[in-house]
Amino acid sequence: MKLKILPENQDAFDRLVKTLKPKHKNDENFQKTMLTYLMLGGESLARHYIEVSNLDFPDVSLLLQHTPLIEPDKETGDNELPDDDENEDEDEDDRDD
Image (cartoon, rainbow, N blue to C red; front, side, top):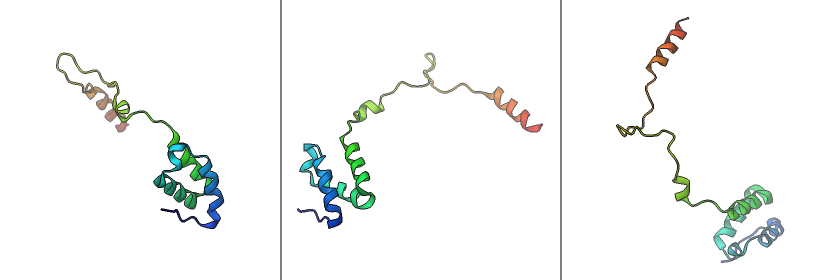
């Protein structure tokens, strides 16, 4: 399917296509999205879309792996924060002044 490009966007679209990596040069969906960004935000927004799409992001499973901020209690297996009841009483006393 041939993309319908307005004459005022044709030059910018051609410049953008020249900068595409080979995997995007024949990708019609990518070029449609690029054209949408071009029409809505101009050439700089379309270039930004291209730059972001060329970035390599870590695998989702790597993003989900993290070390817990709170070490679980070895005796109970509980990983809750200790109660700060004493601090809450002090805060209430400060409000009365």
